[in-house]
Length: 252
Image (cartoon, rainbow, N blue to C red; front, top):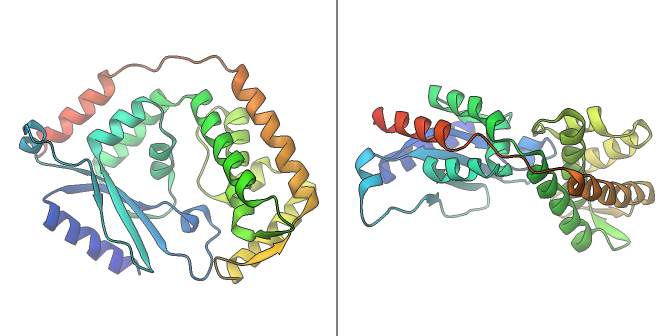
């Protein structure tokens, strides 16, 4: 499957006249809890030719490949990504932390070196809390629960706890978050759900787990209160990002 993905990335470069700086897996496969029928969520950053950034009719800053049953592939212009990184956008941090990499470059490694300068503890905490809250409200209120939705709530809550405990962006792998942040008495229950998730189709259901439900509700309230208490700090400004972007154009 990796060969097919790499081939599709090459096709995108040829068709769009861009250079892909990196491409990674971003969905359940990168999180470590894919189902047998999970698709491949491939995300990438690209840079255009220097003259494209000087046009009056600006090019779109995203490239989207039509969806099918196997692949979900899209990417951002690096200019868009850098503007979002300035705001401590969680998506940029997650893509850069993916354990599954389909394409890399020296420029990608340099980009990762900039991440600590734009990490906002408060913004990322709110992001993961809101993600957990939304999925909890929509999917965990019934007696039978879609198994993957447990992980769509637990993963952001454990990511938020990681940020509080370690003051840095969380890893992508769910297993790392569980090992570092989940209470020991809940780990066997999560491991059982994870085993079911990996063996059943995407729409597999299981009875609501009361212990996990109580833990989730407690953690959501705690993370929200902790995020409210954090004082927002300024990042280091545009200089590093501008310098990085200009250096990319000099290579085109």
